[in-house]
Image 1 (cartoon, helix red, strand yellow):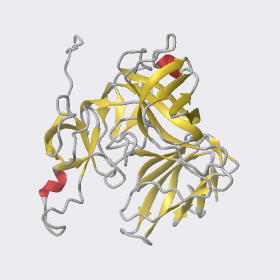
Image 2 (tube, helix red, strand yellow):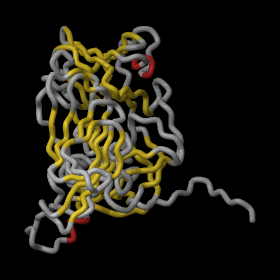
Image 3 (cartoon, helix red, strand yellow):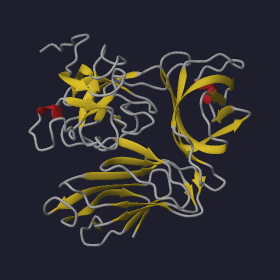
Image 4 (cartoon, helix red, strand yellow):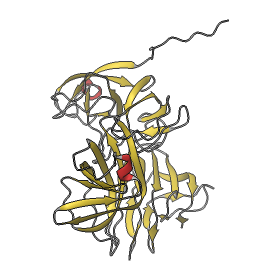
Length: 369
């Protein structure tokens, strides 16, 4: 039989939903269902709970709906839009990674910095996409994924009202030729960071426009307000780069988020999904979080380190836990290096606190007690 190849055909699963929010996200960004919708009261069997969608965040990250179809994004919100659902192909908005065809998994962010954009891989399932094309870091001055330095070794310094990020190659990625002074159209996603001197102060995370490109290894950004020198975790994009991908179906991935551990602070993570723990600085005391018992059977939770935390760690205390042998108790998991990770699943007799236990299903590095 002859091989058949049909140009320009892909198979999205399209659904019409109501976006609740000020502005519809850009094409390819993920949205989540508002299953807490109580327009007619929580006791009412309201079908709108699977019709109304929102920007992903830590309250809806376990209810991934799909991605915004071309031609729908950027308009005024509170209206009906079309999305591509899990179980089909779609063009996903991405950044911070260089995907390889049929090899890279990207997961929708529920972080306040870049909600809806597909970046680092999380747990498999709804909210995670498999790349169906290869995309390397974009060519300077063209739309695309530009640059990523996620280990906390980039530095931002603010002086005389000008904030400069220093990282090897960041200026080149943004089109440096000879002291570019005009805006480049690039955007820096600053997803984490802390002042290395005492790690008491977090960077002001967010997306910032590149203002100038003074050297091959520096850019300045607009609107950043933190004083001092801060180690930061960043990636750069131009425009809204899209990647052809398959949207996984099945259980919820829970999306991803980034957190910044700081000296002696309790830093919370979202319920479910994968939490990326930023690093690249020294802490005099541990940063902490207590993982509560899950409220639903079979929930998954994952933590992964992005950079080194020197001297102290991000310590996750597990309220009810067992190690992978399902015999030895699990009290804490400590993250202090890039690549440290633990994947846990809740095994419950029923639903609710005190009726089950978190069990380690995968783990590399870190310290278990």
